[in-house]
Amino acid sequence: GVEQRTELKESFGKAWSPRYKNKIAKKASEFGIWCVENGYLGSNPFKALPKQFQVKTETRNRILQVKQIEKLFEVIAANEKYHKMAPYFSLLFFGGLRPSEAAAPNASYRRLQWESFSGWERKSEVTNGVRFEVVAEDQLGRRRSKSNIDRTADITPNGVAWIKWALGELPTGGEVYYDRSLVKAIREDADLWGKDSKGKAKWPPDVARHCMHSYADQNSDFEVKILGYWNSCLRHTQALFEKHYQGRVEDQKERTAYFNVKPPTKKAPDGALKT
Image (cartoon, rainbow, N blue to C red):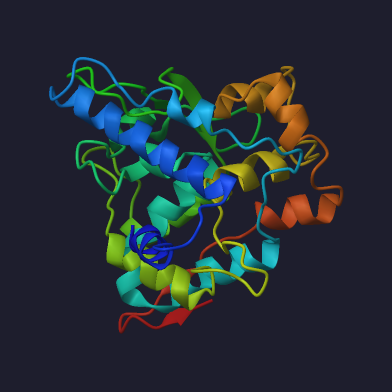
C-alpha cells in the first residue's frame, strides 16, 4: 500500500532494523506465493525468509482502544461516500477476518462472497450474530487465507447491523466492496494512518482481528459453552491465544462497549445522519 511504499523510499541509505528486515522478508514470501498461484513459479523460493529473519519478541500484539474504534465508525457514518466501506470494516472488527480474507487489495479474486453467509440464517448461539464460512481457497485452488484452512467464523450483532445499515439489506449475492483510496481516507480522518509520536504504526498489521479476539475473550455478554470457541472462529492455536489475547481486556465494561459500536438508527434522505 501507500504506507509501505513511502516507508521503503525513506529507508534508502539507512541500515535496516531487524523488524524491518522481517517485514521485507514477509513481503517477499507473499510475492512468491502470488507467483506460484499465477503459474510463474513452481515453488516459492522466498518461503523460508520470514523464519530466517524472524524477530523474537515477548510483547503482545497491539490493539486499539474502544474510543478509537468508535471514532473510526463515526467517521464512516458521517460521510456518505464512506458508507459503502462499512461492511468491510465490520467484517474485520466484528467478524475477525484478515484484510486479505475480506478483500485483498492486490488480488481482485480475493473478495469475500456474500453467499458465504448462507442467507444470514445460521444464527450464532454464542453471540446471537451470524455464523459464516471463511474458505481458504477459491474454486481454482488459489489461496485466500493465511492459514490455508477453512473455518467457520462468527460476526456479532453489531457487525451485522452495520452491514444492513450500509447496504439497506443483508446481501445474499455478489462480493464485499473494497476501495483502497477510501480505506486510506477513512483511516486518515480517524487518525489511524501513519505513525504516532513514538514512531509506532497507528494501525498495526491485523489490528482489527487482534481487537476482535481480545475483546471477545472472557466476555460475559456471550454464551460460550465450547472450550476454544474463539480460537476456532479465528483459527488461533491455544499457544497463540495465551500469548496474545488471554485476559488482555480486563474490564467487562470495555468488552461490552466494543461490541456495542452500532450504526445510527437511520440515514436522512440528504445523506445527513439522524440518530
